[in-house]
Length: 209
Image (tube, rainbow, N blue to C red):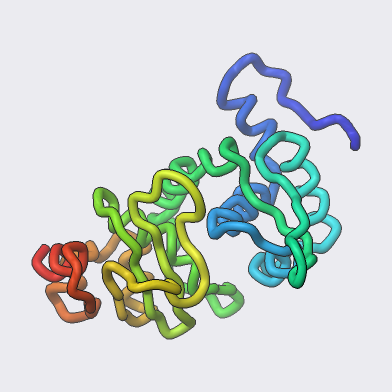
């Protein structure tokens, strides 16, 4: 592989950007925070990226120790990419970027793509301090979050797969308002814009917040 481009600056910020500063890299990390993903799944959930660029970024991420590639056992027998510990450690970086970017989110444009699970990181920020498995039901689809997860995937597509600690049902406008920092989750629950189902302590806390 060609040598990695570098800012050649003895600065931790510059070193970090040497590794994750290329276009698409952090968005690939966002997708892999859901756990192992096939190349075709990544390409489908990164609208606008070319196959050549995606393949190049994944190779760079392998080289830099952010991701690994492995083959699933039969009957799957497909290759998947997943984050290493160093790659997973970028979660708070993405959370901070998301918070910083809230002011520039604005209204959704006519050409803006959206996937239900892209709301996972904003909702994880809204659930900061909580721990538990949360299923989220949106107009665009269903996904689940692992609030307070220390290791492993922090979200995933589809239902939780086991009894969640809480189920949140809300429309896209409400979720967007939460993502833009305009509506605290607790205010959305109190206003009836977010329905909370479940019998566990987490669901009770969210209803009573």
